[in-house]
Length: 246
Image (cartoon, helix red, strand yellow):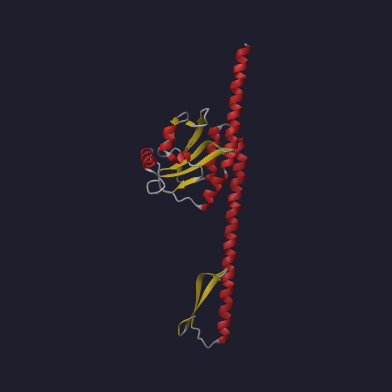
């Protein structure tokens, strides 16, 4: 495409998508040999751009795989739930996130949600502290702060401006100074056994890599959580039997 008498503009294409333009100055439309050369250069530039894109995607996938492998190794090695949440926060390494809480849910005989308890937390020492271990939320409180009950991973770059956030959740978020939140529901089968919540006091735009990595951790966290709960129940049962024997 001739834009000026002495300049030629050629599209740079990647898979039939125009991603840029190559402008060649001082090239006349009657210079057939140079035109052919310019077109060949434009084609090779497009191929090189595609190669660079694929390289970046590959590097990103490798980095995410390494983090996921590290998490898969570290999470089961956590000595307790506090160590589990700390390992998750360190694996994700989102600078803006300053606290996290792991809440486990309790159900009644009718399989209705009764409430949730903070089983573990993490705080980086800056800003508002995370809710203390043992903090209890009633079923109604959980429904008000609806982020807890999300059945799919939820990422809120700015809770104050997100249209998905209802009035009750917004009020609690402001009182707790929660500006950014990521909620990861934890399931065993069809039952939601808890939620892992990451919080920040400043807006943060979650990257696709952060979203994919955090979401991929859910099954492992749920399994470790359930194993820990079964271990604690077995310990209590053993202590009870020991007391009865005595």
